[in-house]
Length: 451
Ligand code: BGC
Image (cartoon, rainbow, N blue to C red; front, top):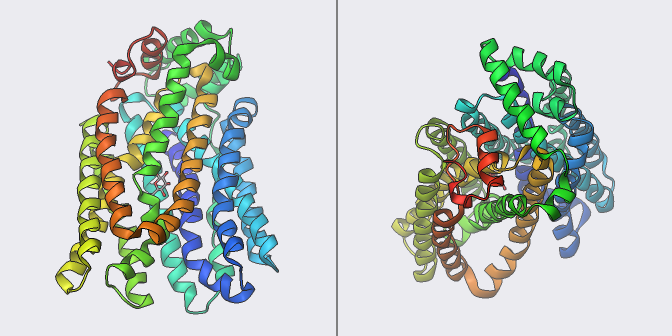
């Protein structure tokens, strides 16, 4: 039952990834058909992120009132409608509306899926299952890159959007068949149902009773204030909300999506001329992203979150510095071109084994139960706002100060994130959500709430 629930929530990850990956391949053909102005082009790309930020911020109250399961159902319906509007769009405005709907869907899904996973899985595999969700994000991006390449031969951007409906329909039927989150049921005073679901998810009745008592205790301690009210009243809760927001901003400012959205252009700037060469390099990037996520899955519940984050930020800082150097001296020979390519691939691997999965995991773990919807809503919203910011500003910086300085800056930023991790990030490996919550609310330093 746990794995069924995970498989389903992971489908939401797949859609997240496909939404991110589809546009880079579809845009040239959309442009050909509709002759977009630069600002309309910018809007068609970024409207998805804006919709996602709105979706993520409203997902908190949707999933609190209707439950995680119905929130996933709502998101799958939005996906289907959004994709169909894009497929049938007769002009840029309809396409723009379709992208906003897709954004709303991905916003709700990217909020609900990790939350649901953190609530149904036992703590000893919690990190692994949330990393599995991130794995599906990367598979979604790769699937979109490959589908973009395949449909580019018939120049059909409509099909590129059309394929999004397949996982969305699967998500719809999957969401119908999984149980409600026991923690959500308990928060709604439906204790018998919560116990019932838990007994399907856990091996022994001792485990069920132990977890139920932890959940009940967590609920009784905080029932007086929730969401916004809790945010204003409880300074300890504010700390976890700000930590979640900061973590997601950090994730976006590593620069990963610069590579995801603009890889073909970057490869061309580092000497790989011709669309097909850069297109293949892009597919290799997507594949590296998928494969390196397995490193995280294998290590997250053994080595812990922090050591992997240190390693990842280190790798990203060094590889960005190398890429910056290659662009600075000019990729004039094959050795330098391949050094640039290797730097990009290693950067992607560094992200995929660390900040990708670790940050979604941490954000789902650090919020106390009564404020979890609010806290994860805020951090997921920050993820999409950061995503919009980086996608919007990168081309401006690239044109303004050039690739060498832009990537040099990203190298410095990633090095600073090592210090951020040292100062603020807790280690949450193998500890129950309720214990983390107790530590947070008793005023322990953020970096110590996992001990
Ligand atoms: C990030 C996305 C990113 C993806 C790449 C996710 O964790 O939130 O913004 O595109 O990883 O694999």
